[in-house]
Image (cartoon, rainbow, N blue to C red; front, side, top):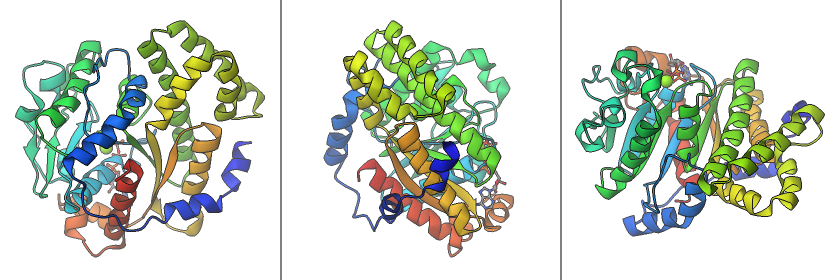
Length: 364
Ligand SMILES: Nc1ncnc2c1ncn2[C@@H]1O[C@H](COP(=O)(O)OP(=O)(O)OP(=O)(O)O)[C@@H](O)[C@H]1O
Ligand SMILES: [Mg+2]
């Protein structure tokens, strides 16, 4: 089943990926109105400890991918710069707890203060710990190493609640127009919740079997986490458990996808599934295939889009592809941003295209 879906590349998907130039950045009131329109569905997909009571965040982009070393930080840093070049003020937050290195992509030394001061210790506000980068319009909140975070247990529910509060702070204090989260590898609950907090969740994938496998696992765990979050938000944890159990069945039968199965379950639990659909529809998933060397590699991205949409039932849009380019490691070695160090490289041009697609996928 999976390989069949992989093999089918839809023309419609391909056409949708060819998104044209975007206009100038909309007025802040337009941005706020578009975010408000998604607020209910967005909140429904958040973990139970994120009590926002209708408070609206700025647009949030997360850059994830189940696997380590697939280019999440490279994409986060350079996408932030390209978005800023279109007039959007971007706050990049390093969410790779314990393995944070986004500051290195910006050529910054290891920062003395960062996200842990806000969410774990509650002794700083986001405004206190954000630093300006050399790229105009891009600010950074650094992550930190294992000692700074005080171990995995430090990220308890209170800490996570402070993280969600800090997203709101960005809008309320007008710190930036867009929040961009650079996620760690794997399918840790924190990583999934941050991915699901995003209005646009970019899934970075390499055209290699191991990366595709991890991306598939990431999509599956994200969907299951979403079901759980909707259950928490509605205080219907029991129904969420039943729905999760029913969803496991396609794995056994391998006949239909989770999307199809949700339709069937919908007849039994119409209210819950309607809320789940609303949570799904208010967040967009974008596949970005990285280190592309051939048309076959590009097609992997298109196949993944089909799987994300048809098999998993996500609201999926193309985030295009990024070429393999030696400029990536050369710029990193120089501790400079790729799009600044090698502005005329093919990869830099692909980042311009990615930025346009990201804005389009966010609805701007
Ligand atoms: N398109 C590309 N062309 C060439 N090299 C690339 C490309 N994308 C990423 N790389 C290289 O791959 C390595 C890993 O990239 P990066 O640090 O962005 O991965 P990551 O997904 O953030 O990893 P981690 O999970 O460890 O945080 C870097 O050395 C980077 O230069
Ligand atoms: Mg990284």
